[in-house]
Length: 194
Image (cartoon, rainbow, N blue to C red):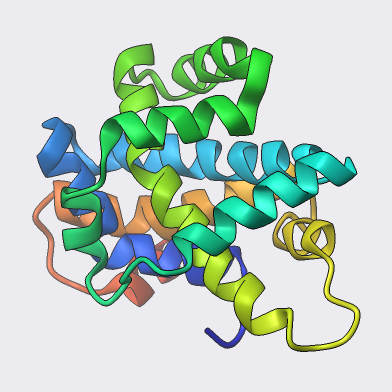
C-alpha cells in the first residue's frame, strides 16, 4: 500500500466502508463518518501511547502481525462480517482505562449515542489493525523501522488536524450517499472548498 497515510485510510473507508457500517448498525453514513473521523485519530493516538513502552510495543506489534493475515480485498464485506466482540476487546486494549471517557467525548462531539459510537469503532478496529499490520509487515523489511514512527507519521499534524482531514474525506462521501446525490469522492472533497 504505497503512500499509506490517513488520506488512504479515509479513501478506503469512503469507498464502501461507511456504507457497510451504516447498513449493519442502521445508521446514516454521515453519522458513521463523523464517528470515524473523530475515532480513528483517537485510536491511532491510543496505539501510539501503548507503543511508547517496550512491552506495549511488543504486544501491539504481535496484534498487528496477527491481523496482517486478514483479507482486505473487499472492505465492505470485511466490515459487514467483522466480529463486534473482538473489536470491543481491541478497543479495550487501545484505550485502556480511558475507554469510557474517550467514547463519551466522541459521542458528545458527534451526537451519536455511546453504544452506537462503541459499535462503529469496534467494527473498524480490526480493519485498522489489518491495515497497520500490512504496513508494518512491508516496512519491517527496511532498516530503521519503528512502530511508534509509523503511528506518529499517521497523526503527522496532530490528532485534531487528523480528525479534520478524515472528516473532509468521509463526510463528503457520506453526505452524498445520505442525500442520494450522484458523484464521486473527488466531487465531495471539492465541495468542501466552495
